[in-house]
Image (cartoon, rainbow, N blue to C red; front, side, top):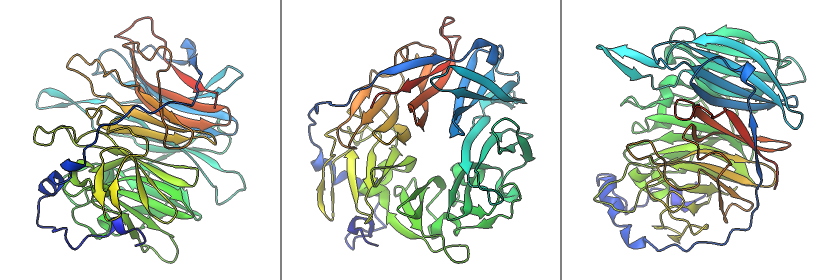
Length: 449
């Protein structure tokens, strides 16, 4: 490995609990200044026309893609009774022309299941898991894919023109359940299965690959958990510097980042880039977002819950990986590494200054700016923290908190969608109109860089 921080140090003893090892980093805690903010943003709100939405009280904007000059949104709509079924919609919007269309609608089950006479939420959030544009091996133009998750009828939808969709049932390797993420690289399609995406107390399943998901011939692209039995999940894929990067979740020793040229015969050879949660150990168990911005790969993490034994050392982080695999701390907890003391380049502590904010839900980049959506903590009444839900940077180091107009409505959830378009960044999330009957579901466009 090229980056010494990725190697297991001879002084790091695997038998020592990662929690105990982590306590030695407490001396690295610093007081953060508030850096000056130089980026500007003008966020405009675009409501979704009411006639495109079914009569419901909860709308979840779950997936997005930019395809053939249109913004596509995967929306799941649920009635006020959680026991009733909902609708899975595909909408598209011609930005700057105010044109909206509905291109697909299908029923989906309620996200609540009956178990032992009680209701519990289905962990995979029924509805749309991904909208992805992938090269088509049979034609020059790409194809739009949509992954719809359901208890009885999961499906992969695909369209070459964006208006007519064909459905393929049970997408993905059947032994691992349906796929919930797709990424193209080197003429192949790579997929994370349901079994690999959720921690079920056992080693992670392998990463899968095929040439064409419409005619799947799935093969394992890696050994399970990249050969580490402590890895429990596969958390994301991204293409960077001509290679495929994959994030593995490890609740005991911290996340890992792996890369491969994906050449030769599968399963491919993979090289570890980062281990032990970038030396934050079990405090950084998973990566929740990956994006490329200005010749670097940025990672957003999900931290563990607050622990009275380690005060102040919780909250999400942002880490960036350079082309030579050296990693830098952009936002988070200072700590020592083989290269010396790692201090956040942004001068922001974890959770953008509030260590109770547990995760970066999304990262996205336009040609001019990098964005991070923050999953804010909520009090017992459901009220979110005062932290900005969205952050923006033009250099990856100086960040400005953004409050989209109307995001303080109790009906608006934290951003779930960050979609780069030629017209700027689209921001969207969940809407619960039982909290504000006057609220209208919609999206924001940051058209100023």
